[in-house]
Length: 149
Image 1 (cartoon, one colour):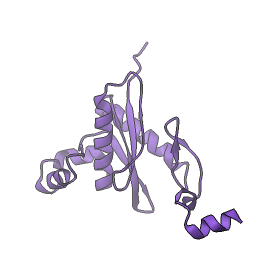
Image 2 (cartoon, helix red, strand yellow):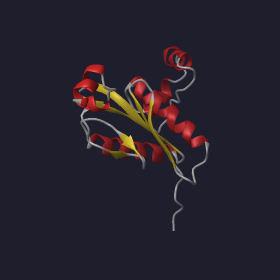
Image 3 (cartoon, one colour):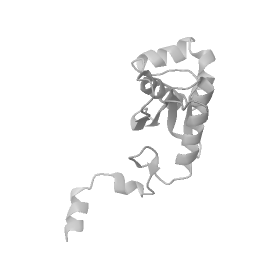
């Protein structure tokens, strides 16, 4: 019987901000950092993080990574979520081989893509509610007053 992989998965928005993170109980603690770094890089460049590996030491990608505070990992294991040619975010995975991480990230994006129009991540990870984007915004004073009538 094959061993169960201990993985961490992160979903971030287009600015690299955390939307959701799940770390399996048997995952090494560093996998959470790996999944985050790969997701941030994928979202920043709008392409799978594995495609960035060859260019990681070139001046522009290296400069962007340094300017971001060193939060990017340009290694295989994350894919962006792109809709209508706009990068909405990315899913990064860590804990397996590079290919296993990317395969899991692609599965995560496929799950998120089927749950549009908006992401709302709740427990457990990747449980998606279909909500209207306005319901995620704080209520304005006018909307609060109208709702209380």
